[in-house]
Image 1: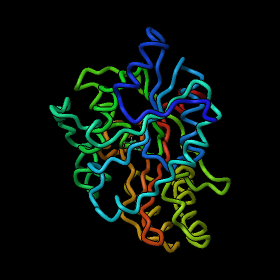
Image 2: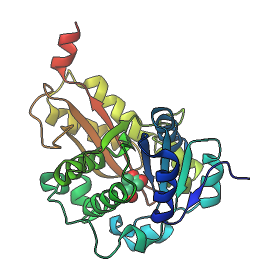
Image 3: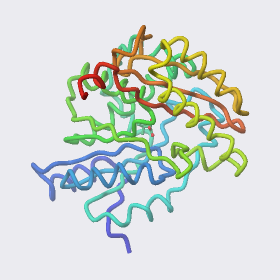
Image 4: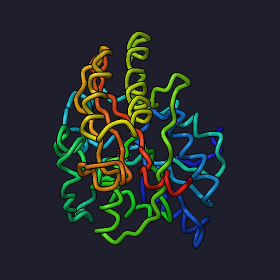
Amino acid sequence: METFRTFDDFDDLKTHVEEFYSGRKIGLVPTMGALHIGHISLVERASKENDFVIVTIFVNPKQFNNKSDLSSYPRTIERDKALLNQFTNVAICIPKENSVYPEPDPYLGVDLGHLDEVLEGCYRPGHFQGVSHVVHNLFYLTNPSSAYFGLKDIQQFAVIKKMNEITGLNIELIGCPTIRSKEGLALSSRNEKLSNEGLRQSLIIIKTLRFVEENKTQYSPDDLKNKAIEFFQEGNLKLEYLDIVNAKTFKQIRNFEEPSVCCIAAYCENIRLIDNVLLESVLDNEKLK
Ligand code: PAF
């Protein structure tokens, strides 16, 4: 027996919230399903910080720039429901495409500027507009107090922040740390498609990020980037990009006096993996001394 409710319609969900949680704190955890421990850590935090949590499961076609990636995206609804069953203040919403994108559509478009031109924005054209659109509509349709996102997708988080500011929805956005396997691989629904050998080879990503962290004080950002690429290429993955940029604007940095992030996207067994590590500003470190 389910201890939580499953909704496939925003109107029923809205009625439920109005009836039982009017004036209370509502958390939203938007997902595309195929839930793993990373998602569950977001739900756990949201469940503690709110009276009621809505977990949406919607594989958003608008954010896939590659049709085969969309059709092969893992769909594990029954397992997802079983994983969420442990929470008593959580409901799942599995909406249909026409409820997420109603007519007229409340999203008027947002200029994401530079964020849409670099790294993920550059290699996945249209992806961030798709994310901005779906997250806007999920915010608009569920009206949460706060929303939770994993920082493995750190550029996505910056995009959502920008959309949230520009549209004036003003939802409190909570970025949560990346959850990793004990070997260090960032958890992702895509990891399910990797063989054991692929899982082993993909550890070059975290090894490279650690190399960057450890060598930050030795090199300039440009030199460190080149050294990190050389280090990464000792492994077997196909690198799409490795860059060190400002952690908020995603613009190039000249030194480590600003908070920065090293981001990697690479293919392992034709599966696209991304990860990043935040590099504290050297100035912050000095202030701590
Ligand atoms: O990070 C994801 O899973 C998706 O991009 C999101 C935020 C649920 C929007 O579809």
